[in-house]
Image 1 (cartoon, one colour):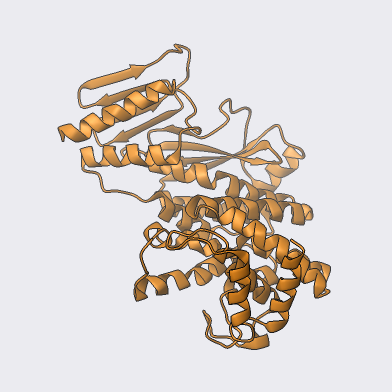
Image 2 (tube, helix red, strand yellow):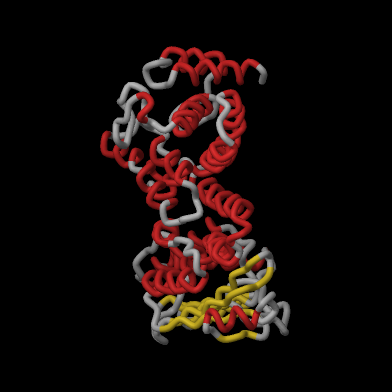
Length: 399
């Protein structure tokens, strides 16, 4: 126990080097770094009766890896069971969906938060500094909040206040209230911090439906950033796939709508990987059969997630679900053959395979472009549509 406490103290010293104002109580020992006597407490959580953590500064700039490590030590010291932030994030995102009516979206978010955090009560407020605020207040049947001085999440033991923005301005405030004896913790903060922007965009999509394409683009970029945090290099990989996909799509004379679906699909086709355990995604050794089966589930996980967002076009959802189908029927999840596979999913599947070979992965190093093209040609008409393989070669010859 002494060694764990020493590690906790090292973490506290790190906070001091980052000039974070804090007050931390461990058993009967109190550790303080309160340089700003006028600072307002914005974060208070308890780990049982032994540990109290108070922050007087916004801690958004502290890396999640540090906070997760700190939380783990606090749990080990107090005997509180561990909690996985990524699992909770995926569980929330799995159920978040955009309703056409803003009131329905708010009620759905309220229900999700109440289930995830086991809330006693939820209060929702509308910031007064919004366009059409009186009309919104009547339509939503919620209270005003005059001001909210902090530009971020506030946690006070069993109460969490989360501001959600629309068009860069505070729009709604969710006050999530647990029973008095149940404190929030650092993992809860990490979860809410990471989903805040995505949920803000969900609310914004309901509120500003006429700005569909712009808002959808933002929402998918948020999903891409979430995937990047889970699978380093994913954002760059998606960008490579996107650029080539549009070129191939134009050569096929796809419609404007199909090209847009290609764009959005290339951003999130692997989003289901946020539901795959990190130890499998980053494993350097050969995967076991059960691990391979788990990896294959990412297309189902991804499809279930995007299906909750009605503004995402069906063509994009098909890309997420079918991009690992193979021309000869040996792909997954359904073993579709040839033109049974939607053409947009065929394009993304081919480019995903190609650009993966050009990138380092935990289990192998990248290969030269010439070798990658050679391997793709070997499977032309087998795994891949031969017409698309020829178009890929044309596109790559101009790079």
